[in-house]
Length: 485
Image (cartoon, rainbow, N blue to C red; front, side):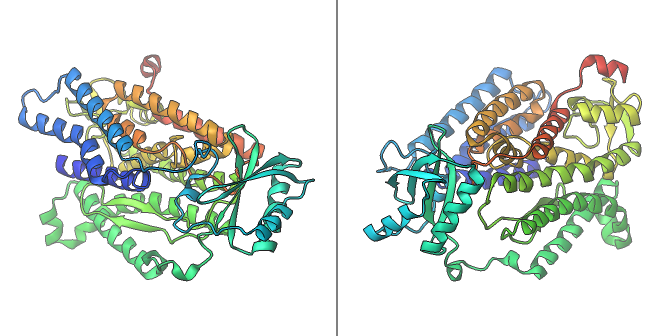
């Protein structure tokens, strides 16, 4: 089991590094991955070589993790690509996805520059100056109306003059004044984009069937049936369906909700598809990818909150039903928040309340919970909701706070969340790898095309309730409440 946990952690870490830092450093991703995986490998080897006392000295673990993290930052810094851009070209000026476009901005002839200037009506946005960047033209001026009307007007004018040649972005500059960014449209030439396998419903459905089988086999093992028994009698696979259907229901409804929101807002997206995995949980999850830029912060909010919200709404009833059919077992040294056979629920306020009400005595220090397979699926959904709600970078929670408070404030909230998660990992060491993964995720996410217009009150309230739910899941239960329950 330890090997497969390490393998899954390695795969997740590599995917995060590949998708987050590959475009901002020349340091090989495999080297950064090796540095970040070193603490986990060393600690596991230490525990395996010292079975009598596998505990690593606290000072040694802290020194190892700190040293590897500092080495990771140094390698990341040493591999930064050279740039000839002037100091004024900061990340606040040009949104991150525009800086990675592979095609260069077409030179604007004097006649075209006059056409571009004519697109800015003084009663909507009084243009003061144009600044040229390798991948964009920054248009600075004074906003004279509400951001929604200004964006629609300028965008329509530019489309009339230049067609679909450019993307039009409205965002806050470094002085918090709205500015327009005109950049090449990467979707103009759709013939150059290779067709992706997820465009084929048959492949997506085939992956679902394979994932259903792999998760069913894992569910059979969770039900206490060994592999040689169900291989000899395939009818025993039916006992793994409660876990498989519960887990795939959580993941599937989450991705279908995201797909429906994307279609509702006319965003181009791939089909949702599952990733089968024959061990551990039976799957590495399900996901889809948006191909269209987000038009505004309202759409950004809707597309980010729907996943965690549906995940919680589906997994919470499963967790309640599964806990009511779970059993109490004596707690041992191996009990913890990642041991499904001996779960300690007191690390989570929400889980403690549910366990205390449905399983009296489960909060006593000498007791642990042997989770029912359906409870495992609900518990995993609860963890997935909490992880994706973390207000950091491209996670759903990071995009949600970006939509609520703006991109600059979202960066500050993300940094604070990282530090709070690290402090929480001191209380619960099982969360330390989670905290490290959060430090690997860049704080900045992709901006919306209209990144200035604010949300309505209904979305703001829903976002605050989601953050409250995150705290309710992650905060440990107070000792006083434990005694009451």
